[in-house]
Image (cartoon, rainbow, N blue to C red; front, side, top):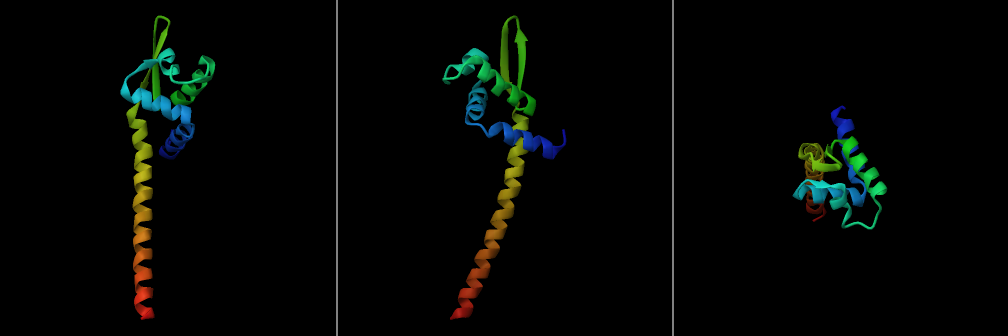
Length: 111
């Protein structure tokens, strides 16, 4: 998966509030599907679809021992999204600084 595709998949997976809450839960500790389902008012098949999206995006990994599947967060995948956001913040801060300088110059020229 290319870096751009990876970031797109990350943001697509994080675009749903249920999936963001699952990520928050997994940031505390690994959990089974049953544990992850407790705070939600959704059925297990629906949660399973959300977890599948998170796994395909690479944000979550699962392992199965016996009948229990445990899900874990893959923090490195969040870093790619964070890096993209930092670049955007830097770009827009620079642009806003330039706008501020331009407006200050215009104000000085009016007087």
